[in-house]
Image 1 (cartoon, rainbow, N blue to C red):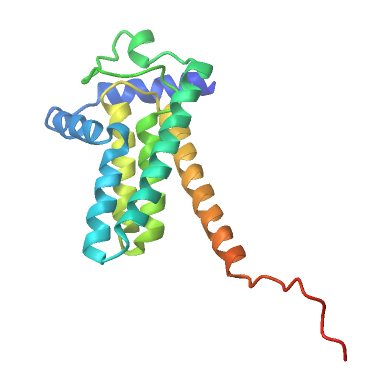
Image 2: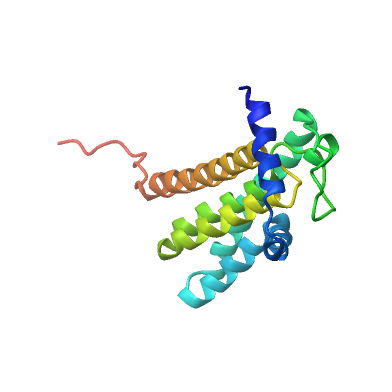
Length: 189
């Protein structure tokens, strides 16, 4: 079975097995996930509650989330995969207002970028951050606007952006902690 067929089959199965009372929950999760704003708001609240540097926490989170979002917006026209509702007649999206093509999912990218950076900054919330990220990412399949592969690609991209940013930050801290060498000649003895 080809990946495209599996992807379409899983998408169709999810859409055909929606549960009416869950529809507004997944629509709300999808709305909350737009532009990754939920992650930046969480960063502000958590920084205030934990008495961490507000500007640092918020800027790091926003930088990772929006970098992931910009990458997805740049990749969408290059990959140009049609949205499921454009190719599957039974897709029946629960929410409109999608931007660009389908692959990768911007919601998944921003959610996993946000979850990774917040889990790094606030380790106690790791499980909750990833549950929220998975829920937002899955909501895009549930409401009928992304294939599962779009979501997986977006999640991987978002996580990679945050891991790269955090590695760069740690590298920078390590190299700036090394005392500078003296330019003077060693003492003669």
